[in-house]
Image 1 (cartoon, helix red, strand yellow):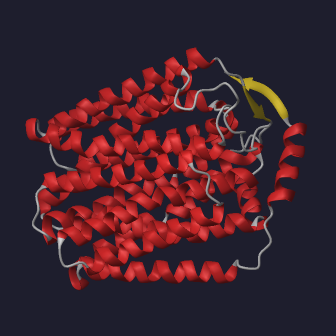
Image 2 (image 1 turned 30 degrees about the horizontal axis):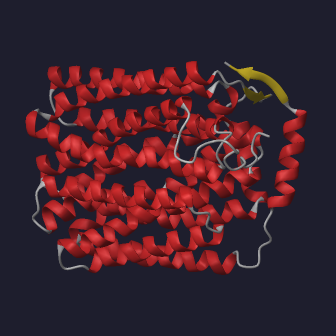
Length: 432
């Protein structure tokens, strides 16, 4: 049933084998994330090395991250209305094209602004691809539970994060950054070819639901209606705002902290990014094999992220900062599995894309806000003080959410029944 949690692996499916269509889907995800991560790695590094300013690096992060988050509601509504497979194809081909176009403009006019603009535009298209995969995943992995599907998908995602900084640093040793961007375009095209292979191997038919013609206001009304009525959605949004304050300030300041504060090189910066992704993969493999209660996933993930922020802010050396950084980026994905599993259980399938799009926007607005705070406060207060301030704020948000929602009843049973009833009424023709 669309929107319900998939059953565990069926008898006869080998534990450590994977179907070819599943593998092609995850390879596409890996290549797309690898290319996206190379761009994310290059932007703050090039800006900081060019300007030698943490404030400018924070502002660049704000400019590149805000558009990708603002696009979530529209992209979610589009994925409910049109084929998410076609939307994913457009996302990957257009990102490749923009990489080439931006570097042509750079060759003609010069300036690093083209890199920031490219990252912002690719961020919107990345959002489009993320939402398309989010809508697809509950329906195409019939042999896995949804929690296990999320774990494997994030392993593919984090593998791109492992190799992204290393590949970017290696390529920057050989070529100027604009040539690296052109090579990144090729990775986006390879991701699309892998997705075409998945289509040919799977040959699945997915349900669509009758949708309103309006893709602007009506989807927002429906999404906010679900958020108002479902307590669990309000809870995970509140907690995710706190988590993303920490993630945002970490992304915005990690280059400045490693290269500026601790006087390390860009290879150390790349190594730290890769170590964070390896830590995350270890955690995700554990989650793919061991079933943990939802409460444990959420509480452990949130508390470890907050702890990592305090360690990063207060550490006098790079080793201590690295420990805090690893806690933040590693347990962020544990919290992410908790959040995505929870919302998949309670959101009606016909409204899944539009509702998840609005939720993701609300969750992630705190990331560019953190980058903006770094831009405004890093010079007068210092980077450490900004990180510490946001760590305290996140702890207050977490404690407040636990107190406010402690006695709230779970809406799971009612929501699932209503989702199933509505899904039965509104079946349509299959996606091609």
